[in-house]
Image (cartoon, rainbow over all chains, first blue to last red; front, side):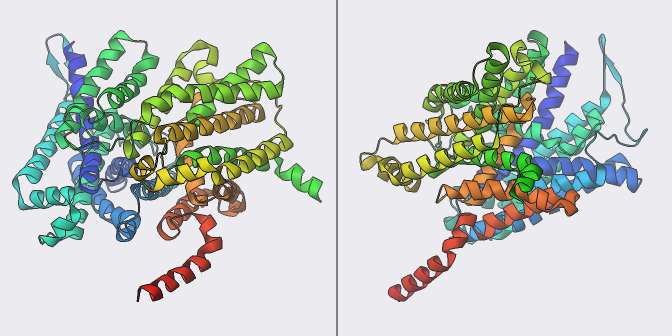
Length: 292
Length: 288
């Protein structure tokens, strides 16, 4: 039992890191950035490049992957979203342009690394096993949970307690009013993309470390799960994304216990559908949902 | 000459035609301003229905195709009633959720062959079937677009509240677009199952849903020719880019990005671009 709970918290932390990056862009800019799963994958592969090609230790690879994916996020905004923003294009256009960027990135990584599952160099990841009662647990996952929580706390402080956070919230509320009140909108958007993509990249690295198995299409399943996480918590709500992530993590681990294994993923999508039908604004959503 | 062309490219042409039908299926809802991503699932439901009717019941092909389309359309009614309470991104996500549930169910129930899918489906689809059905579908929907229903869809797309205040039954017209789309996607699913010998749940997942959407958007929403142009170009392009085989997905992505950034209303607007520019200039002169 402690083992299952431990795994639920672990997978919940990964879902949370992935989904808060997704939710941050959605809350500030009202766009669904479908290149986020590609950024997630890019984080895992940046770490692989650092460790296998450059021979750096795992800790350095995590930091480099965060910065690299963050910078990539800024580039993504300049290429895929900024031109549409200037034209006031509908949100659908932004979804499609991010799909295009995602397809390009995934294919380029496939050309470099192939489509198969890859592992990090042997001996580069410690496993640090420890004992709780009867169960032997993987200590690396505990480190990962710790890193994930540190990022979540850091982001909460940034949004709630700093001037930048106030600017982002103003931007989310009303971009025109924010500009009139002296917020440098383009700068705030660039920072949003840096943080969002950096978090997505970190989620990719940490998941890659935990399973020691990465592949170019790895983002797709997490993208679909992240939809559930965001909808359950309330689209664009950061605490909601964290709550939704742990509900999904616990629910999935429990469903493996009680349901045939084929239905594991059905749990996530069934939950998604149910919430959309009975409470579309999610558990913590307060924004009026765009509905008829 | 033509015989040789058909012999060499018949598979490609068949795929182009089926993709064009799928693109049209999502175009109907996009024309009404609604972004749904459930058509890959409707395609899958019909593909399995029609393949099973052929394999287990030995029913004649036209009937099997029709049955696939009807099953998808019938399932679209309760789903549409449920999800059209939502709009925008929420609607898109709800239909993605539906698509994944369908995929997981196809993977889990025994009659669909689970992960292995269905094999040995007799190849009954011929090129002229696809050409005929595509022509009929495009013609009929072209006429619908010019009718009261088409104008109602356009009104809903431009402003839902204004459309409702003009007495347009918004919910009903949206649902009609959704059900028509599901039916067309279902026909395409039946055709594709009887073309490709085998089907599996992975053929009808999220990736396929996005691909169908991309065909329609690249081609353009203003006219029913848009999805046909988009599907043709993006299906044939990999063949034309064969020398650059490894990079063709990269090019495809780049084209998509180019279209959405520079031609937001799709490739079909290229034909009228000059006229639009002239009109815009005249408009500016008037304003001055």
